Length: 484
Image (cartoon, rainbow, N blue to C red; front, top):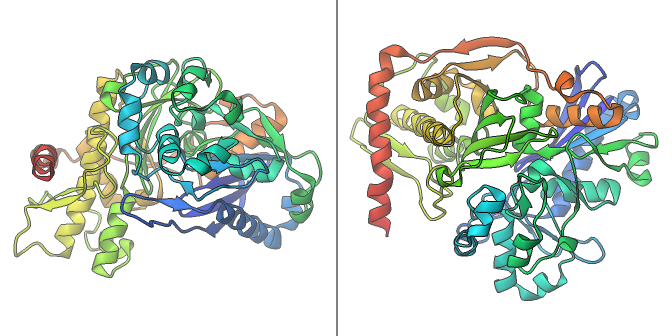
């Protein structure tokens, strides 16, 4: 048996698979985000441990024999979070999360240093880890001085599981401290933020062993000794492993809290000017590119909260048949935006509202706005030299056929729906746990699921969607100009 632990923004998910990669069971432990100031987003690292205990405890209660047979654990996690650890391994403050934008000034200052783009292949985004440490240095100097290690969220969970300070390439590539081509920490970039390699965890590949489960935790979960904990992956690379998106040309579109258009690459192909992320993949000798939007299902959930309806109720009102855009446009920039604007201060907007703009029209506009944000990502990937012919849909929002139809039509490519099953980040993490524990060939393990259905672009609405996308594209400079 093999266990995947995915530390997300809203929950820790535990997923148990057998040696044939069949899902045995899954469970979750819920998490909450603290937003003490505008633009801030934090979590208490102790809550991650508590949520993991709940999730695995639920599995133990229902499947004690299967959990006892676990030989490998894989980790996946939300990327970019700054977890500052003191000399005794304690968290010194709440973790500053991926969607926290307080360090936008520090990010701009680091990005102005040409070494960062040259070595990392990426813009220094406000959500990345390095500018957060620059912010802590300037605003919380005592905390900065007490910091002995900086860990990404899943690697803090690893510290609790194994007692080891270890990370891996895919997650570390999102810190702005990694030499992404060389797959090693850059002493030069660390020094630019008054850090050293001593502040960093050791690095392994995602398929390699990254520690072994501590005895007390193994005993509490009813596991034996010598349980391998794999290097694991950042959440998007883990999802790619779960989906089999590991060969050049493979792609997926993820409709989660944030949105990702992910393309696997067999070589390092940076183009930071396009605001595309170029990161190491979880598999050795592989990289990937991503266009990232910060508020995907978050946008629909925001509207659901305003409307007093469940998100599924809102999308159900539209049915499954794609409608022509109504003229109402929505910019999904509730937390700023990464690809293609790299703008932490921009905020969302509706435009084109009229007396007849009812709840369904607003829902439709939100779904289309997110679809057009993915179109922005596609154009940025193309500018970076990546060609995509189709993509597979994953994430909670992919349950809406209407939304997938809007995305397919906005992108102009087919979107595949995988056969029933859980192929997300927790499954990918479990696969990495299997590889690390058994030495299996990664490409033989990380295969793609069968396709249950394919959503084709709606040719009849192509022109209407093109016009709506043009309106969408015109809104950002107009509103940005009004805000500045």
